[in-house]
Image (tube, rainbow, N blue to C red; front, side, top):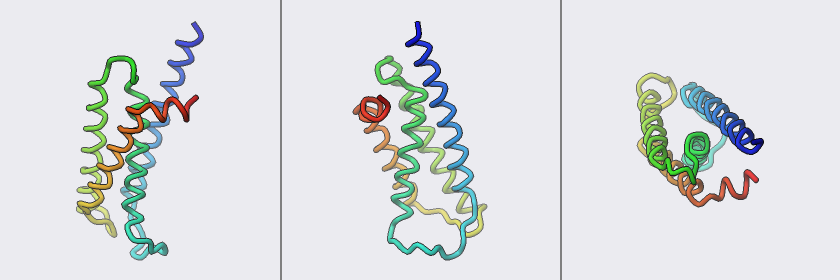
Length: 132
């Protein structure tokens, strides 16, 4: 009896973390940035986008989809939602946030992060090694 309760509590904790992470990411992505940043590493922002969206999709997949539950249809809903979320954020940045702009390559980096997160989830690496 303890194991199902423990799994339920763990899943609710992950859902809370996924929601909190989503709120923080949204706030950061919609905050105006200084005109010139002090870090001058080419394409560093693209790597940041990959990491942000990889973690975002991993958390939501972990919270909403059990790899072994047979509910794989939820996987595509999560991936689709995160992809649309990233596109909407880029459109908002381009139209409403001073010092931010729409960047198609950010959407490609977001997509790469989503696919990487999905791959990590599907291989079980995240659940089998990190969460044990």
